[in-house]
Amino acid sequence: MGNLEWIFTGFTVFIGMAGAACTVILPIIILAGIGFFLYRRNQQSSAYRQAAQSWPSAKGIVLMSSVQSRHSGKSHSTYPVVVYQYEVGGKSYQSQMIKAGEQFMNVRVIGQAQATVARYPIGANVTVYYNPANPTESALEI
Image 1 (tube, rainbow, N blue to C red):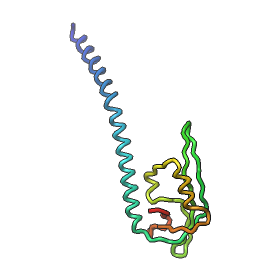
Image 2 (image 1 turned 90 degrees about the vertical axis):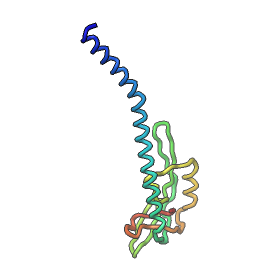
Image 3 (image 1 turned 180 degrees about the vertical axis):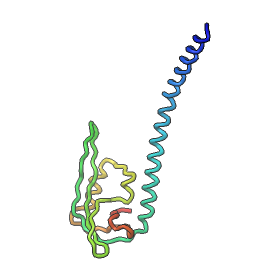
Image 4 (image 1 turned 120 degrees about the horizontal axis):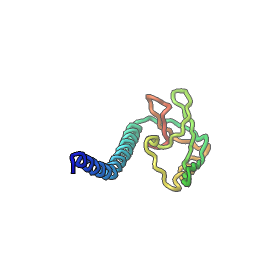
């Protein structure tokens, strides 16, 4: 075999090994990235809920309470929508955040939407926890 044939043979073997490595390494990198993303979102949610523990409360009233549906291909999910109004410092606010930190990480359980809506019927008086530095941030549960 000449030098040129050895080079082509070595290159072919290298390409074969690189392809095999990519089929193993690439999925690991992707899964690690997804895991890191979920970990960070959970950390943000936990930190937000921890900060919300010291929020003051105000009286509020539920304006709307319903179960909404979302269809995506063959997937179907339901989620609660609760709109409430509250007043801080003479100014009126509206929000629909149910649980503090849910904007970062929200895991829904089947039947949970109906149970949440049942806890917050239209016209119900509720306790609203709000961020004193930014009263537009609020939640019904902390």
